[in-house]
Length: 165
Image (tube, rainbow, N blue to C red; front, side, top):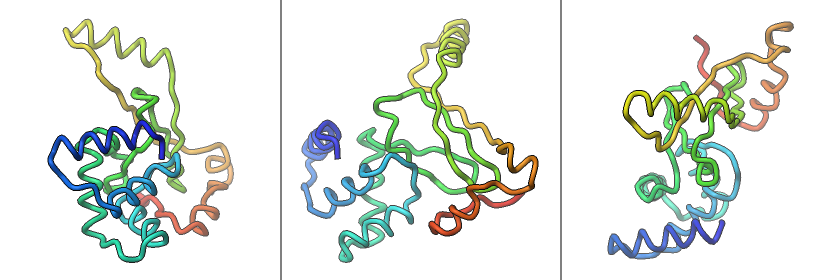
């Protein structure tokens, strides 16, 4: 886990008068150990591999704490589940491209979108703090062959698949 994230979490915990616990630290370490989105259940599974004593409730409470501390962001990727984004700190205005077949998420940044957002919000009398755009798309292979090449890898990895519409 990045030392800046650890320091921000420690500061937040002490400001709230909470205790620093080993379980909270392990959950945070696991949450920020990869640069990918996750659900609470996916994080719980990852945490159990490191510490089998941590309860699901502790993971959920810690996720709430990390969101409240503005270290994680809850995002809607369209699959009726709350997904957590651990990597918006360095990229506060990043966007998501979601495969409609396998659910793969690709983050992207675009200066033109940032300029357009700035112009739009200024014209309406606001100042943008953050933005997030979700684009649901299908890859060329899905359009041509009817199946995304990442679908099998997604199934084998045990990741959740998007619900078909």
